[in-house]
Amino acid sequence: MAFDDILCEYNTLYGIEHGYLSPIEACQVNLKYDLGTVQYREDTGDYDAADIARVMSGTAAGIAEAYTSNARGQTIIFAPSIEEGKNVTALLNSQHGASTAAFIDGTTQNRGRLLEAYRLGLIKVTLSAMLS
Image 1 (tube, rainbow, N blue to C red):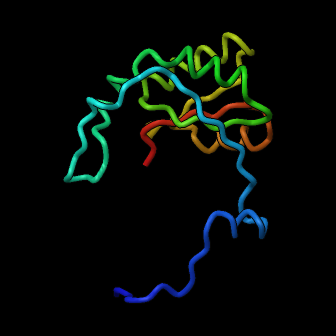
Image 2 (tube, rainbow, N blue to C red):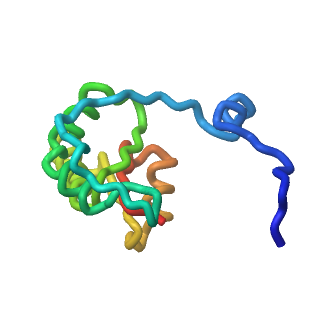
């Protein structure tokens, strides 16, 4: 069954103001990469994931530095690729302690356990890439 009208619609601000969502603090970090060569795929309406991974390869140190300089409290990082996400996770854990960060992708078997550890504050940083 398809519907022509939306019954109700709530935006992020409504969710935060009414306690459904947590307030968000974000910062933009410049990592010296050029997305100008990344192909846009008309069939998916998105940029090519392999091209993004290629262009952003090698940004792990910059991402880890940005975390160290800017993070206040728990942090979520959306990595440009699985490889880069794992690299950032390894850097953060070596710089800030072994259980600082956890990486989650579409193949992570213990996703629920990691998210619960994050919710409890046992993990400070959750990184993710290619989640569905």
